[in-house]
Length: 121
Image (cartoon, rainbow, N blue to C red; front, side, top):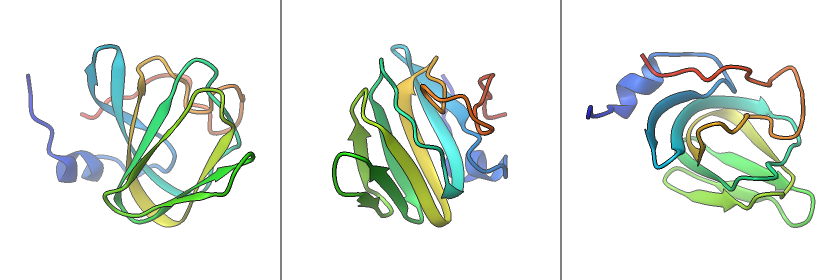
């Protein structure tokens, strides 16, 4: 067991939309990401996805309902199969909770698709 200092963990990388695994539990991964701009529209057929905003603001655009705007300290769970697109007008630091093997772009193969899992050093 090792504790994770979120300040240090977020300071250890600078890439946007490139999540790092900070911990794993019960088959789930706690991923940290710095985000700015628009991500790709995608869905995860087999997994719910939790977005928690640590700093900044994140908008989750949804095709089937109104956008959800998350400020610091807020989270939302996007249910499996729901098409969504995360957007941050300015940099935001977020935590993601999802099955460890979940691909960041879900059912879409895009430039932002992460092909290997990266961990916090």
